[in-house]
Image (spheres, rainbow, N blue to C red):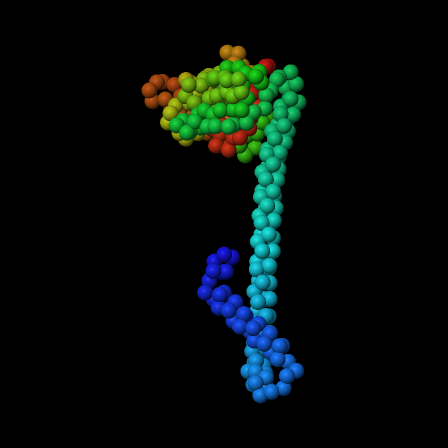
Length: 284
């Protein structure tokens, strides 16, 4: 606005309007006096008077433009505020839906294991150096969480319905957070069995398999009856994990070239890349 007021064009318009106004005042002062001078002035000022009326209209349009521009700016500001409020409501809605889904899983788990104690938690950080091996939860010792508490998910990858799927184990605890090592961490060992053959072993992984998102059940006999599709669950031995948590399904059985045994390759039931919320089993 200040630039417009200081512009040469605006000053020219003001000068013209001033000249027109002076002419109009002179014409008014000489009105009613009939002499050659007044007649000549009338002839000269007639087009000027018309131009003055046109200039007044232009000035009115000019002011109206700025009034409209100001109103438009106010409207845009209101719309931007409304849009920001809608975005915030969308975020709050999405968060509420995520919590609702987590609580539904929690209720299903409580129905299946009424004596178990669970603490719902959300992932707040992942270790970028270890890909999917560890992550941090927003619950800690103040919520009753301790080292070696099992961590579960109520939903498996691509599955419908709730269950108890093993994610990993708590490895360190702070008052308001804890670190979880998943079953894709080579340091995690879980006593397990195959549900059809009842063959037992210890599920773990290697760096190579972990990069592929896989685990293994090693030290099987080469004559093992475990086959592709077999379900691997926790056996309950060792006291850290309760029995019958679902670990995953067998994708293939291979001979171990370094020994005379075989091992089953396991696809974990949980999709760790999309995991956002979990349940920490604090007592069972």
